[in-house]
Amino acid sequence: MTSPSASWNPVWDLRQLLAYPFMVQAFAAGTIVAVLAGAVGWYMVLRRQTFAGHTLSTMAFPGAAAGLLFALPGALGYYLACGVAAVVLARRPDAHDSQGGIQSARIGTVQAVGLAVGFVLLAMSHGVLGGLDGLLFGSFLGVTDTQVWVLAAAAAAILGILVVVGRPLLFASLDPEAAAARGVPVRTLEIGFMLVLGVTVAAATQITGALLVFAVLVSPAATAQRVAGRPIASMVLSVACAVMIVWLSLACAYFSPFPLGFFTTTFAFLAYAAARWGRLPRRRAGAAVVA
Amino acid sequence: MTILLVSIPTFLALTAIAAVCGLVGWFAVLRAQVFAVDAMSHFAFTGAVAAVAFSIDPRVGLFGLTLCCALLLVALGGRGRVDDVTIGIAVTWVLGLGVLALAVVARGGAAGEGATAAVALFGDISGIDTAHAVTAILIAGAVAVVLVAIARPLVFASIDPGVARSRGLPVAMLGLMYFVVLGGVAAEATQAVGALLLIGLVSAPAGAAHRLSGRPYRGMSLAVGIAVGSAWLGLWVSAEIPSVAPSSAIVGVAALAFAAAVLPERLRGRRRGVMGSAVPGPR
Image 1 (tube, rainbow over the protein chains, first blue to last red):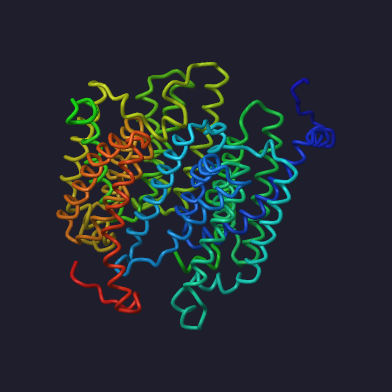
Image 2: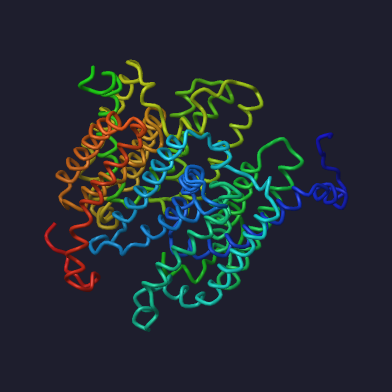
């Protein structure tokens, strides 16, 4: 097989891109992950829970290690690890912790403990985890049909939940006190969102690795919230931006010798940089009141 | 040296790094910026890999890139304060560059000794020799001197930047100095003991210390004490249970200390009913 090279004819390029089934599946999985992460990430950025999202995405490591040691079926390990971490992270915040310092320490501790547990589990199973680099930096390649369907089902469930709780969650994220006064179950939404974030990350990391998931969770959402003002428009922009980043980076990675992770993160950063320093309108999302 | 459980250089370097992680962590928790420390450890990883990829001195790559990224974060944040979204975006991009560097290393067939993700994450404390230990202790000493010297204004600027600025304190400058110090600690700790120990020893002991005491100098001493105690106890645990690596054991002990500091308050709060209405008691 000769290495693929891009021509100036987009139709021919596209046909080349989709010539192999593994690329079709990569596009399918990548698109699902992008739509899911674009939407969930929008709330994550709005709620300033980026560190929690990052920590959840590193739970891929203990998740995979647990799956290996206990021979868990499918991707159960990922869901367990992310679920446990999400529950710990969603604990009631400290009464004295007005600046969020203790919460920040707690997130860091959860990450360290998760990695440490993963390390111990890995040592106990005497196993070599199929490439730690792949687990952390991953790609969309080597996805099976079943995985795509499971991912699609998880994405449909999560997006369904978001559609139902979207409005109250927005209210609770922007102004928790006013929302609570109006009878919005703020505390339940907080816990629920952390679990949604955990499940999203668990569903995606097993395919894409920790880095790619986090890149499409945070950057498109941050970009969209800098550019668009209205919540719905901003959310749609976030999803569109995530999908574009994933498609572009898959195409670039296919035609070049460089890794996918580099392209995805670079495009994600460029989108944010354009929104921040470009000559785009500088309105912030309704979110502006939070900051 | 069976009393120390590890060689003398390893023991001394680990103790120095733990102490300085506790101290830096106290400020990180005060500023609610533990994510910045985590970010720095990722920068250090990229720096180490990039140094191998472009065959420059690893120390130069490591410290150079980490400090550059620290300055970049400050520039992105403005006013010496960076929010978590900005940190998240910077982290992903720099890690992406690290992935590129890893690919270059793999292609060049250069022995990526010491530059793999596994070593950067979990470290290898048995690899610390006398020269490493001297470096670690010197850096830790310098960091401690700088932090103690600027402690008073830095605490003020961290708690209430607005008032501090109006009193004429150079808030942005203090934030910058703090980030440079943080970059130095992260680079040193990541290459000596790994990112896992860095993030564990920065967040857990400092979280516990903030919970136990609201007074700055007492809190700092507590954080340092808990961090060093966790390191020593962790070494012992790891010697007793060989399947648990030293770094994992140390993180475990530190996390237990944090949990022990947080739980009593939590139980009391529950008895009192609504947590949110609890009056902040004497710390």
